[in-house]
Image (tube, rainbow, N blue to C red; front, top):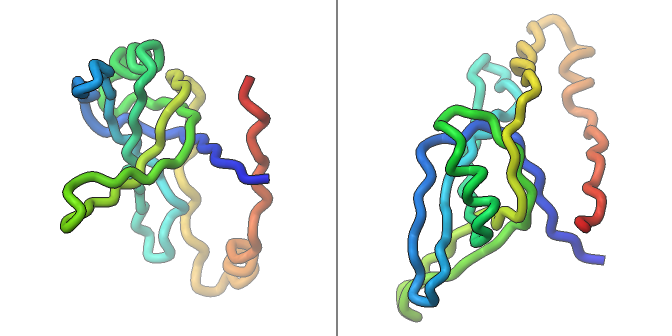
Length: 137
């Protein structure tokens, strides 16, 4: 069975933007900054993930947050195609169905292993199990 479920916890990167569409709907857009595991050279890498919602209740929750506030969102990964047939633009984003402020303390990424600590390097290479989301009600 195919599944398209996304759960993100990260920081709001900037103020939320709203755009009215020709259909009369309003799309609310923002980006979430999500940290990756710390890079071996000590640099913390992040991803900036574009998010959108068409739901007024979800938009109101996100509008109530300030940049750099933590937020948890759930939704689905989408690929949207814009522009004329000769110059298509492909955009990937998370279409958010629910959002809530995230209050828990988020730990800092672990320091990279030292050059003589091979067990830590091997442990980092072993795939981790990831729990799947329960079906949305």
